[in-house]
Image (cartoon, rainbow, N blue to C red; front, side, top):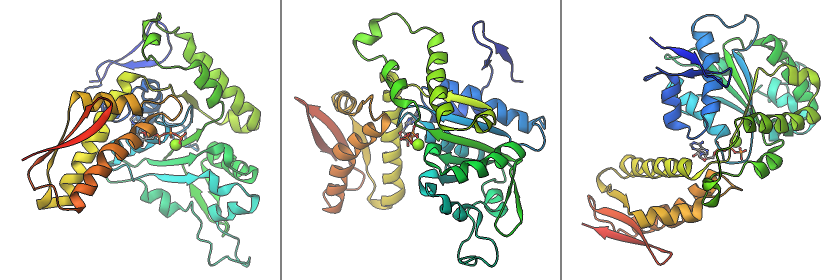
Length: 343
Ligand SMILES: Nc1ncnc2c1ncn2[C@@H]1O[C@H](COP(=O)(O)OP(=O)(O)OP(=O)(O)O)[C@@H](O)[C@H]1O
Ligand SMILES: [Mg+2]
């Protein structure tokens, strides 16, 4: 039995006894963004309980905030939890729909129009249904970088967000009632970033941040969104989540995730030639030292691991220098990385 209780300060439900429920499984994949989990899970529970309003998508959630803080990862993590793989989601890259005429790629050209046969609409019912799975009937639909979409596309979105339907070029309709829709945007991210410095070093010694700060960040993001989109569009968004810059604790957990993913890849791809990986405390610290970036978020951490661990190890693999079953260790001395081999 799951118990929810309201926290003293906020209106949002906390998951006290979630055990191995959605929120717990999500938080193992998505680090340091508990607001996102606490906002999204209730939409899924409402759908699972059969209490979602009819004639609307399961939810329309706008994810705002700086680059590399986990906006896209949130939807991938949800796909992993609901469907067993992060690939079970439909992603529409709005950067590909910046010109007014490009929206035909989304809905297909009407019969008789030039290119009718060649343009397979991107958003068909079959594709939406295929994004669900045996374990969950929820399809996840992500419109990435929504601020880049042409206004013809945002107009099209109005119908999807409000009535959960879309009319295609061939006049058939697509139903989105079992779809949870995410919109991501960097709008306002620069201003959010300026006051959203994570707790590194000196900052960590300052008194804890005001609880109102979350609301302040949100209002900055929303002001930027209101400037860009029509009131009708903004009005169709059920919830807005503002992502925080990742602090050192979050980066440490993400580093563990990156290193485990690398170890899994070696086991999966190299079969009998596989080996073990280790990272000394000095190696870890050096990765964090270089990889933590307020500007680029966890992407910089991923790149740091790639440059200093994955690529050197790949070079050793391709020249046949790692005996199967041995251990490859990442260490650092005097600010330089070194790779050791133990047989
Ligand atoms: N909070 C997080 N928890 C776990 N991993 C994260 C988190 N944030 C970022 N990452 C890692 O960094 C990568 C990039 O993050 P993501 O794609 O979610 O960034 P984003 O917020 O969508 O940025 P952008 O605005 O540039 O699209 C992810 O694939 C993931 O590996
Ligand atoms: Mg993204």
